[in-house]
Length: 188
Length: 390
Image (cartoon, rainbow over all chains, first blue to last red; front, side, top):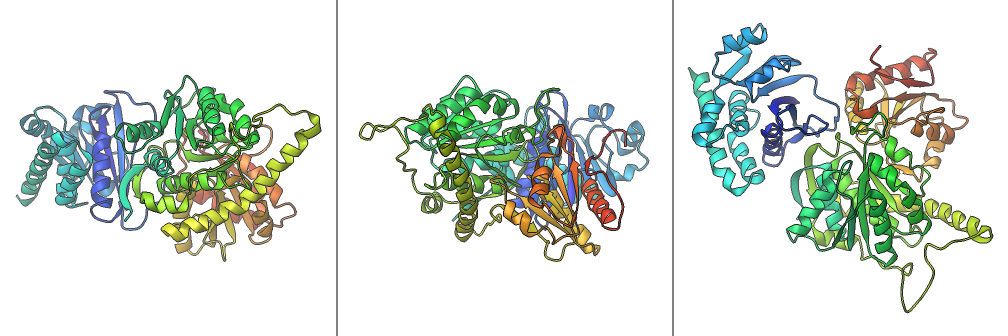
């Protein structure tokens, strides 16, 4: 089973991204998936978590996620208020929206292994392609580029399935841009 | 062809309501209400469903207006949670005593005070003697399917008793997974329109929700108890009929999971049953003979089942997300009483209160404690697990 944790701020779509990944895995790839937000009151701007579980076998586990194969951080200022590497498995990966290098992020958060950190300037892509700094689908594209948890085609199908008509095309384009960028970086 | 969608249990339950074609939905929309009634309102706004939606000023009024509609012979739905359910409490016995087959969903959440909007089952368990059938579900799919089944059970002429479908707050209500939504025609073939003589009818006038003195009161209560006996059979037969239609069965009153050769079992109610399932699989792989008894119907309580397995297992642990202060966990006291004279070791684990997580490790610890009891270790009968000071 793959377990993914999303760090975001209330109202910025972290949980929507967690759900999109679940839709991509279950509805479009026939796997079992589960998505849930951090439980409790909803507050715009407050640090929030989202979770996605993906498995070949039916998921019946309703406990919280304690170990992560992938952690996705939508806003680097969250590193100041949350332990973003908590529960990250030895072979796990942290994908973070930042202009810093992986080395600089590792040093900043006091994490020993920069090779497990993938950086992407998602805000830059968002401003260019969406016209606002909402990075949830971009970070989804980046995380899928790093991990291949699902195919990019399934992510696009999930965006079509879940998002409003006027958001679909530009979000697919932005997610694909991040996916390509990460794949290119891996090639080098 | 049924359709598959990635839904929260609240949304799944809302589909169950839509497919049951109620005439009236009444709800108080403010905290601790959940997104369930929002989704139902969406169906109405989108023209996907047609019913009268009553927005009322309190949960008490929600149940009172549901009763009013039901007294006119309408199929009726409402939902609440936590303090909302407690505020509704007065009306619950009006509905059950007047034998109106209303179906409601309770999103199981803790009760004040201290105020906490997170999940546990103390709200529902406080309603134990309200005269409502109380079913608990393990997943969004089961929530959808059980709402539909609930109408068929409630409206059965031998039963005519309201049903509360319990869905764990957050761990189910706000958790998304894949749900199969049956076709309307499929549900129509299973659930006929509600047709009753227990209603206000100008051609056949009668008194409803009446005042009854000592001369007849006991007989009314006796008939309610008989109705619950009928419900015991009906919950099983309705589950079987639904399974034939959709291929999905939940066992009826209980479901045994890997119990055939089990030495040690846990009894679980609601979403934690799913987590226990995962732990059972892992421990079975390690050669431990463990099993799960999922309690689906709390009222009527499957007394005969527990009586029948009283000497089947070496130890039985009961997980409770509620406690009857001064006695035991609410489910445990029922299991223990039904298994009177059992040779099995028994223990009660109070966990998951006010939204605290029940991790797999904690469930594994329960099984290991039970194995310890089998090999002669003494343990307190009722234990709060995972305390901060442990």
